[in-house]
Image (cartoon, rainbow, N blue to C red; front, side):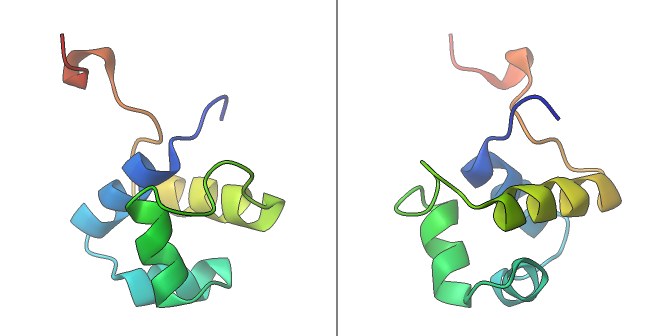
Length: 75
């Protein structure tokens, strides 16, 4: 995947039914770290390869987009 919007992807995974705890287990992170990343507070400027590849894999498995579509962008 060319781009990855971490908060957007995490929110999509949550809408798909995963909890922050489940996502954290898949990524090797705590629930608190996932919560902070989803809120854009931490870990999104220089995420590890493990986080990026894990999010891409989860997004693909759950058919979740990793970047907002142009239609969903505010005008």
